[in-house]
Length: 232
Image 1 (tube, helix red, strand yellow):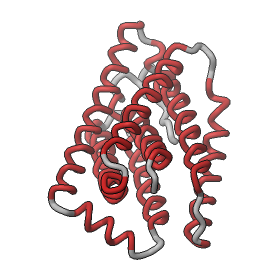
Image 2 (cartoon, rainbow, N blue to C red; image 1 turned 90 degrees about the horizontal axis):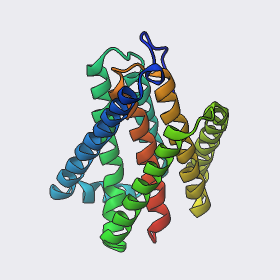
Image 3 (cartoon, helix red, strand yellow; image 1 turned 90 degrees about the vertical axis):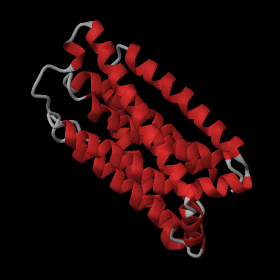
Image 4 (cartoon, rainbow, N blue to C red; image 1 turned 45 degrees about the vertical axis):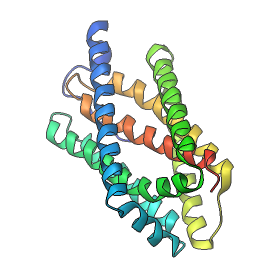
């Protein structure tokens, strides 16, 4: 999670109406990234690519390694997109690149869920994620408390999760439901911290970079909520 030093005044110093306008643009771009994600998923399912990816991953034990690799690439894209806050093209590339990567990552998982649980689990996880994201965003927006103290907890939790995932891949362990619950909590903390930091650090023109930061945490939260709700 990287925040570059702004070359202009951060959003928090602007009038209330400008701060609201900024955050509306952020959420509009998150919705745009979700639209790209849904369109890409539809294409993957329509062409049979989702089924092919599911069959490929079902042959071996590298699923967690693939998940780890894609999420690492997604995090790298997020970092690169927010390095230059005055370059909208780079920010859009990071946002849509993340949406494309996550569509590939989710495709075999969604294929499995649709064929075992049906669409109910997917829609349920999506609704829970949306409600959770909205609630956390509201808390971060309205609270006057500085949430910087949770940054070390997020970093420590991220490293711990990485170690557990690598260990699970190497030793063939199943991390289980409690790991998913922990990851949902970790992403919730990340959304709280990121939303507040976006307001305190980002300049007014960096709403796309802000969307990249929040989109990554939201999609990771959705992944683990869906894992909890699905039978497999």
